[in-house]
Length: 376
Image 1: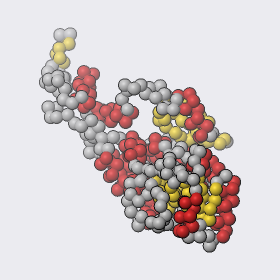
Image 2 (image 1 turned 135 degrees about the horizontal axis):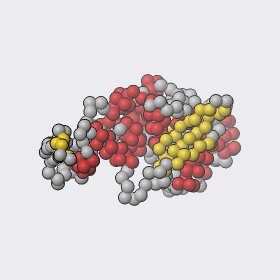
Image 3 (image 1 turned 180 degrees about the vertical axis):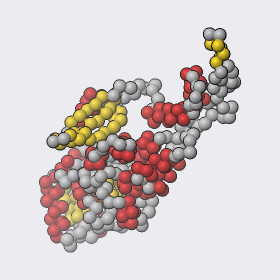
Image 4 (image 1 turned 90 degrees about the vertical axis):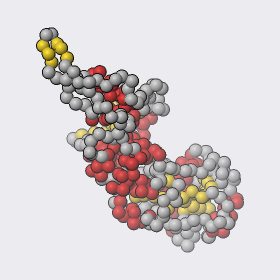
């Protein structure tokens, strides 16, 4: 598969180039920073056109290659490797096991025997044949032991990076349906970037053509209300101040059907039963905080209680390892990334391949800028 390098200093522009030149289904293999003496660092993306319809998925190719190479022994020849591939992918080979035998050659008998594949049943495709586990690789990269064990148990044969990509993609994230009037709030620790992430999400909703209403519930904090009102005016969002939950209910009844009300409330806020609207509760995870501190802040939230996670302050984080460990523990997927101080830039799509590539590029020696990974 032919790869192409894209180099520049603007990540969003580079992604647009990838989509323009290679198509919407282009495969991104790596994203890293190129450090230069006397100049600002550049961003490099390696990508390739989408694979053919009949091509094997990249994760399966890696699993097959890892399995076959782990079983290579001295004296093996190409036909032996082909037989191993057949056994690992298509089930037990119809070809009888090759027994050890000598091979004549130009009148001289070769003392090396032909490799005979083991007679026991073939391993499951991707099954590891050595004592080292993928969990070791995760923990060496800094991911918590609990998260490492969960990922390996789900994808027992894959190498660490593709296993992490697959696991991040399977974690659930839910969003308001297109035609329902819904409430959205973002929970999380104080000072964790909740309000900023909420404004970004509201702006993204509005730019997508859907009515977005910003609701302030902390009317007693006048400065906070004024700040939100100013942001709403600049971003072109409707703004409502709800003195209490009855005010939230009134706002729900007054908006047009299909609107989304983004409620800036205290941590832990949940609408009462008389507010008849679906409620989507997300959680802000400051990417610059250590895992232990994140866990301490949200340990009472419970699994499955969030619609999605939103890593915040990703522009100042060294990496997203604490976030990855936390979302695996919560069982919640990453909805989007909140990066930078300019709210008008909106949200940043959470790309599982870029997140995983950044984590493992750093431990294998590649110099990766954590801010780049966080905003990829």
